[in-house]
Image: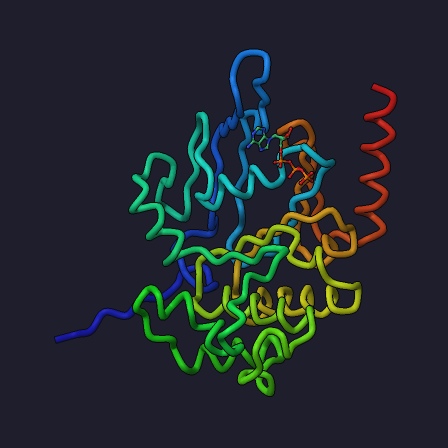
Length: 262
Ligand SMILES: Nc1ncnc2c1ncn2[C@@H]1O[C@H](COP(=O)(O)OP(=O)(O)OP(=O)(O)O)[C@@H](O)[C@H]1O
């Protein structure tokens, strides 16, 4: 009897296609009648596997809404969202919860660590809840990549903000999700701790093949990404590959100036 071996065709931590997530003609509207707000207006986007993508744009442009729709945390009004080959729009609640748990990782601005658990227990908690055994080698590599080996027995209150966010990053990476979504993951950190966490996110893409999508307002944070998508009024209006902080800042100033003159 031969045993089946799964080989990932395009590298990375899961999935079989070069595109980790897709949005097709996605519309998201809140409210109705006079109070109707179109947060996403026919958005088409492909998120490349094994890449770090930043989503930028002015306040209210739809960044969080796009991230939440891509991650199956929010429903769309029309259009389709795919994770790898799975269409997630239209999935029933139970299947969607399962998919988020098994295939997606999250890093939010608030670290959301449990105070009574130590760093290692926090990192493995989602897998414990899902009844999955952590892959020990992978876990060791993740812990090493985020530089937490000597802090695993510490509780969150015994860690700095940057270290706590690194625990949250390790928690997201440990389950080897196909894609990680971050909503301003360094928003609560000072610039040094923020740089540290962003460096670890970058390494997880380069060394572990992780796919990451991050919403940010910060040109320096965006410069760690491979690609920046710019949203305005619920539409993707521009993108930049291999961004530098200066180029991102210039582009933002350009948008501001155009916004004021139009
Ligand atoms: N639950 C909601 N009910 C009604 N309107 C909403 C809701 N959530 C978001 N919106 C509206 O949708 C639009 C997009 O919001 P979203 O939070 O996606 O923007 P954002 O670009 O992430 O903004 P910020 O940078 O300020 O966080 C905004 O006009 C917002 O007011």
